[in-house]
Amino acid sequence: MPSATPSPADGRRPATGTEPGAAALLGWLTDPDAPRLCLVTGAPGRGKTALLGWLAAHGTRARRGRARTERALVPLAGQSALGAAWTLANRLGVVARTPADLVHALATSEARRPGRPVLLLTDLHAAAEPAALADLLTALAEVGRIRLVVELRPGTPAPEAARTTVVDLDEDGGDEGGADGWNGLPPGPARPLPDLSDPVAVCAADPLLVTTGYATAAGDDHGGLRDAWLRAGQALCAADGPAGRALTLLTALGDGADPRLRPALADQAGPAPWRLRWARHRGDVAPPWPGPVAVLGATAEGPSAGLLLAGDRTGAVRLLREADATGEGRLAHRVPGRVTALAPTADGTVLLLDEHGRLHAVRGTAPRPPYLERLTDAVSTTLSRHPGTALAAIAGSVVVGDRLGSVHAFGVTGLHQAALHSGRVTAVTAVGAEAPFVCSGGADGTVRLWTPGRPPVPEPLAERRAPVVALHAAPAPGGPLVAAAWADGRVELIPAEGGRRRSFRPGPAVRAVAVTATGALLVGTDESLVCLEPQGN
Image (cartoon, rainbow, N blue to C red; front, side, top):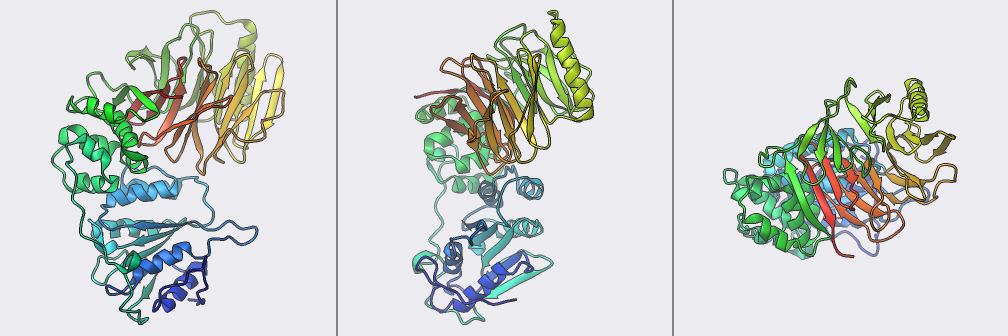
């Protein structure tokens, strides 16, 4: 392995006695052909943790014209494999229900990260589940998009990979006066668990400590808190403060939970920017769960006013009452395979985009004007030759996104097009207000506004380092609102004309979002459908 001499980073140098280890780590970090896994080992007091902390801060400035490779320092002391998976998923911009989900998500996601992120993982020997964590890190080492530095003591179960670099501070003659841990102190005593049946105590405690308690003490559901925590745990680990955690936990409670939990959590969630209207989850029977949600549609006018259209991965589209998600039947359509987007129109017709990018129309009971029939047929013919990736509709227009980043507005007065994204357009929506506009999202993580026939708004409405997965916009009492969801699990409700933005994470991966006529937010996943109302100014 090439070596390098450590240099100061923001005035800091590696601890005395760890300079050879620091040189070895910098050599590993700068060698593109080095193994993806590096183990830093040595007896207690050799300065292993401090060395990883130095590496996290070293060289914070990128070279000219090149983005700095992200380095994330993640303490493993006291963590379960599940808690560590959620922590890493939040750091890397993916959603994972389990450790296995994390590996799959990192191998397949389109998250926008410069280079190969470096995870600096301290104190594996002090983890609650060191063996299970070693298995997780072994699997992560095989994912080519990340590199791992793992600190552990001799005798600890170690991650294994086909190729591994080992930095042994015992062999480097590390200083016995050094430290594992910050400020020269060894890890402190294990912190006591809160009462895992008390919602107030659970929301006030360290979420990773709570996760360890629920993950390692199976058998007691704690009145439904454990199931809710495991459903929404990644979001709970990222939530800000007790109020945010209480709101997220409240949205994840199943119908069989102890009835005393809801008022306790609702009271604690009072300062949060949302109020829960209702939530339905897999396994609920009273009221019943309406099924998984892959796409959502809503309209405030016409024959389907007050109804939601919720499509699943099999292609079925269910009709649900917006007020409480009660089922009102199914959409009668013959689209083979999966429906990837749907767009209800004011006359009751529902436009569907199938998994091959082709357009289908399910006509309502009201007769359609001939010009709309001709428009739909023309768009359908176009998409049979040039498949679409996203779909929306407003009066007199059908809007389609494509895999090259362009958005096309087919109208009765002609075609307007704009190149809005770098890479595939993943979602579009449109609002036919006094000033109609199109909103699009892409694999590049941006959400953009455009009025057909005019130049696009140059600055994105929103942007994250993860692909946009769903969009919906609608007029609301205070002005048009845009709901956007990204592949990292975050949802934002954004006033299109400016104002306070609100965010929410349900925990599971978000598949679809919708805005109601009253300004409420609907969030659909594979196992839940949640309705939230904004509160506060």
